[in-house]
Amino acid sequence: MDDTLVPEVLQMIGQVVPDGVSIAISDGSSYLYYRPSSVIDLKIRPGDLVPEGSATYQALQEMGKVGHYVESRVFGVPYYGLSLPLVNHGRVMGCITAIYAPQALPLPAQEPRLSFLIGKDEDGWRPIQLHEIVFISSNEGKTFLHTANGTYANKYSLGELETILPSNQFVRCHRSYFVNLEAIGFIHPHFHSTFLLEMKDKHKTRVPVSQTYSSSFRQLLGF
Image (cartoon, rainbow, N blue to C red; front, side, top):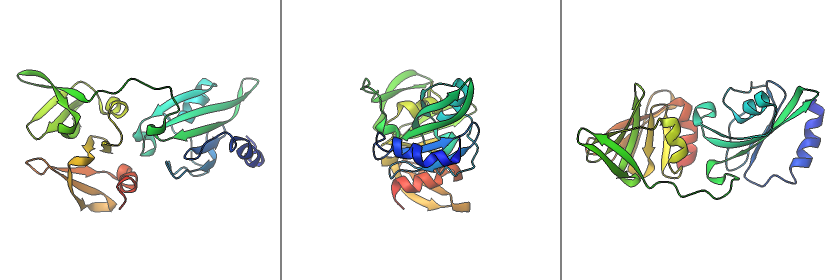
C-alpha cells in the first residue's frame, strides 16, 4: 500500500470506526501506520513486521476479511481484530485492522460464560467457583487450579482459558500463570522491571509477572 494513501484511508474509516478502537494499516509484511485508542494499545510501531498469529497476519494469509481473537502471547495483551485486506488481481496490496478490547467485542450476544471450572484430584471431579480460584498455573502441558483448599487439575490450556475466563477478574501475567485480581495481596518489585504477586492463599504464594506482561499489567492496575 502506498504510504501517501494512509491519510485518505484514515479519513474514510474515521467516520465508521467508533471511539475506543485502535487502527493498524500494513502492507503485505509490515505495519505502515498505527493509531492506538485510550482503551487498548498494542504498542505497534511503523516498520514492525506483522507477527504470526495476529489478526492482520491471518487476513493476509487468507486474502479475505477475518474476525480473529488473538491471545496475549502475540502483543502482550489479548484483543479482537477485524481485518480486511486489499487484494488486487490475486496480490495483497495491504490490510487494515480494527483492534478491539476483548470486553468490547463487536459480536452478537453470546451465552453467559460458566461461573465455575471443573477441577480434578485423586478423589474425582468437582465444580470450582471462579471466585474460589486464587491463581492458575501450567506445568509440562498440564493446567492446575489453585484454591485456598487445594490444587486441582483442569483440562483446558491457558490459551483456551484466556477465551473463557472473564477478563475483568482473571489476568494472564506470565506464559504459565493467570491470577485472580481479587486474590492479589501484595505486589513486590523484582528484577528488570518485573514483579512478584503475593497471593492471598495460606502459603502466600508468589506468582511472577514477566516482562512480556508487565507493561499491560501495570496499565490495568494503574501503577
